[in-house]
Length: 459
Image (cartoon, rainbow, N blue to C red; front, top):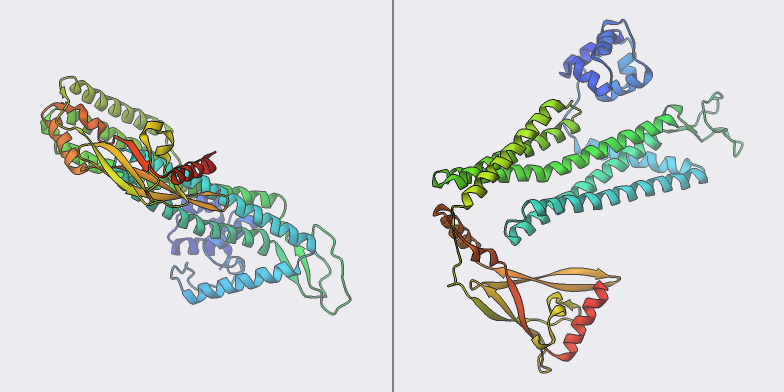
């Protein structure tokens, strides 16, 4: 079976069309058609790419022997994976010790730079995506937002570990294991190399490292460019995670708003705005999908859909704001401020940022106290919720105290929805997250220690 017949047979057995194969090889469909008809023949680089796509050797692809049915085996064998990993490590170690000293230094430098780039990219992308998630869900309860950001941060952390290992593996394989060849045959005289080979000792066998010209110079830059494109696609995939979460959230919000559609035009406007937001997020997800899978974007349609989403968002918000003009705005004065006392266990590494900006008359020095007592003013009978997180300064770890009012959020949401149904707006609901440190009771030594800890960390 010649090459043209074999290519057509393998392609059909793997359920790949000529157009799909052409996209993977960055050629036209007509080129693939000519290869299969026997009127043209691919160059060496395309042959290597075809063998990788169908997971077969070049010998199986281009020789004239009749081959059995060739298909990509999608089953994962753990023992085979272990053997491949062991063989990869063995070859890598053997290659490293066969290098000259200069090549070893270059190898370690390049891998070190690659790991540094991956590490910096992971830090930047993780911070950006976590902050994006936090801003998307900023109107939700703090505990819920912290849980989501923690899960996203953990997922991104594990993803970058796996992604980093894959990138380093690919670079080691394509840049080094496929780049260097170990020759042990002393009868080989003709070599295509970039540098002359010097015989170190007179032996029956030579063990030298030569360069593979197909993986040098310009080809290396092409590999680096492909690696950069692949990393960019992985980052796009990570960005798709918060977009997907936002799409699910707005779908739930749309169903929720529809259930109140009969209670007035305000909820109808909210529904229209949510539909616009869903269209916009879907557009972003579609763009990311096309980017990852190398699909062409129809920019005229994208622009039209974008304009439609903006119009829906603007129209919905405009209708809702117009409806607010007919609402009865009032303040429920029955809800009053209340001061509660809290005991904070003193630690040598404790930081309480709120007390740094207190007026002197609000700091009560009581040297009989071992811990810190705080009078905190809140609304709606709210109780303060305390938590600590770690901050690092050189080798010192500080426990920073955070706090927020833990009020009955479910009850407040129900009251707000009920007011909106009755065309009312209680301005007091805007102050539910309010709290103020009214007084602090602390010994002089502990107060000095708290201030010193704060200035050591933040100054």
